[in-house]
Length: 137
Image (tube, rainbow, N blue to C red; front, side, top):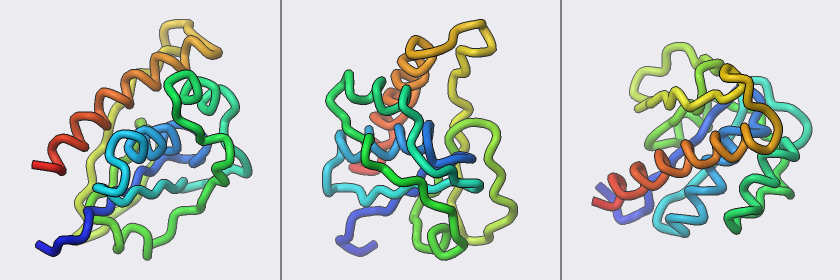
């Protein structure tokens, strides 16, 4: 293994919410120890305001993020691809290590708005902390 930091690519459908939250939290936790990127299988045009608000509450600013459309090159360049949530599909990518995080979805329990985003943020934050710790071992 080289001395360069591992590259983790977080993916969701829109690259406006969950994957951006995961990337922002990982960057906040790991700094330059892990190269972080995020993308969407069907990228939107702007970050989700409630996602940005929920992260701002814990000192992470994603308000300037512009959603990025996922490319095969991004998948090839990543040491680890993490699909955040259940909706994004990547197909078959031999040689690419892929994990899926089936994150909490509070809207299924009737929880919406900023409360929903806080629960999602906290779930993703726990997963990011565990991943960062495992990559630094």
